[in-house]
Image (cartoon, rainbow, N blue to C red; front, side, top):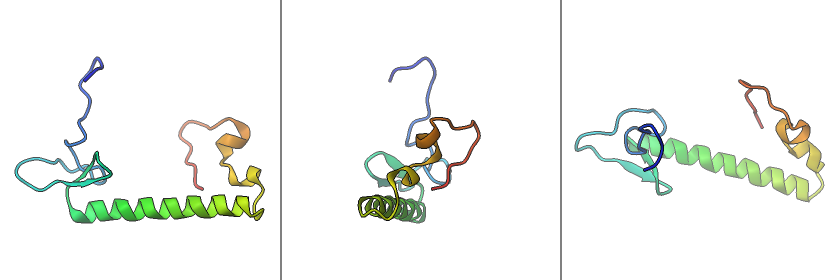
Length: 91
C-alpha cells in the first residue's frame, strides 16, 4: 500500500462502533470492504444506508415531478458553493 504513514486497515475495527476486530471472532462484511463486529452493527448500517437511499430517491422523484424546484433540492453547498468548516449538513 502506498503513502508515507501507516493507515488504518478496514479490518482493524468495526466500521460502526469502532470496536477492534481481532482474535478468532467472526467479522461481518457488507458491500465488499466494510467490516463489522456483529450482525447488529452491520444491520444498523444497512438500515441507515437503505433510509438514505430512500430519501435520495424521494428527493430525485420530487424534483423530476416538479414538486420541488431543482435549486431547493440541492444542499447549501451546491447553491452557494461555500460550506463552513465544522458545519453539519442535514438534508
